[in-house]
Length: 99
Ligand SMILES: [Zn+2]
Image (cartoon, rainbow, N blue to C red; front, side, top):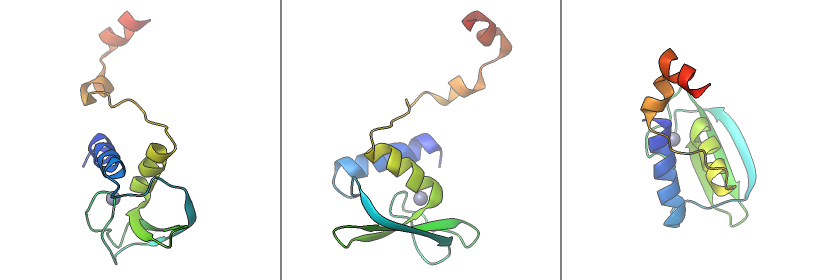
């Protein structure tokens, strides 16, 4: 799943109240393999890092390390533009026109 797709999914969940919009009380990182990510709804593999995120309400969620980073950006208001992926593949002619 691309980062843009994960970001849109997380944003929709935050806006729907399915994911808290921070702040978290404590966060622990460890090797995955035990759960499903609350952000992207896919299993957290044994070779991935999972974060256990605790909130002041007592709620605890497991998420991928990368999903946690995107989720935090969403709840703190840092939202990089969701540029079309073709913009990441600019050729030299496009770059030279930009200079
Ligand atoms: Zn995830």
